[in-house]
Length: 190
View (cartoon, rainbow, N blue to C red):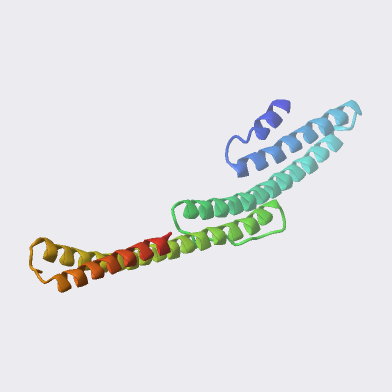
């Protein structure tokens, strides 16, 4: 009895087996006690046989009910496990259908909002990543335009294409404006 109870507390084996075994142990203890008490009370053989048949019938019913209960619990635990596995595999739309009115139902009711939060977080992450990519594309474009202008003006001055002092002053003024524009863009980024 004590060894069986300790084994059950450690959670060894499938849940349906543990619950059925618990019922079986309870019935075995009850049968032994009733049989021993009947023997000590000197009940007749006929009465003892009738008592044992009634006890056996009660044991079969009890073990059957225990097996049905265990099967129901095991199915609900399996549904929760499937839901958790689906979430773990990346299916963030996974939900479980709560059934019953016990702790497993409460767990199922907690599972679904958790899964919804994970799904919302993943959607927000996707939106954030898309916004980040869009921002980088816009910043890249906005920075390349003044840089391209600066590069062309600088190459024209270095290559000596410009020999007119007025045009050179205009190019240098334009370059200063582009540098100021880049500086503003960088300040805006920060």
